[in-house]
Length: 148
Image (cartoon, rainbow, N blue to C red; front, side, top):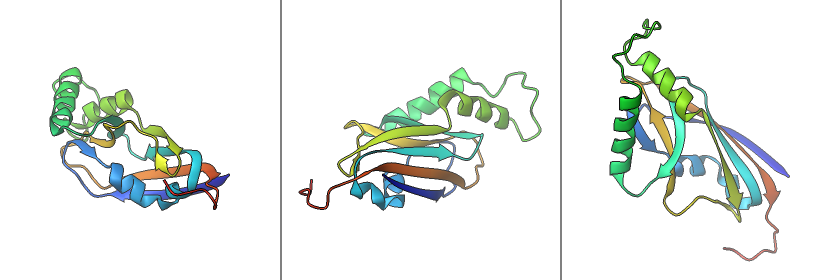
């Protein structure tokens, strides 16, 4: 078994759903050496989250943001208001969507569906740089195996 771990700093992004699949894969090039394994992605923040969803139509990203804002409105009698009106809703959204993803690795690639992509879900209006911890573990590919 091989283990690899990296921290990936994502640039500041505006509020919304941002496709980060390519950035994640580029940060862990060892994926190409794994026959079977798992990639765990963990975000070290409480006001942003991770999700996997359709990556082909940008309307999906806008609709996800709109739906989540309807489910978790900013105008609600929150008690935690010290960091602005978007902070507590961001914590609720983060709790709903989650702080990690676990993705299978098969024959040197993420084993995602055709239309699936990894999203950074930014829930703050003025976000900071976001950090991800990427942990890859798996069985190395045979050096004699033919390329995919």
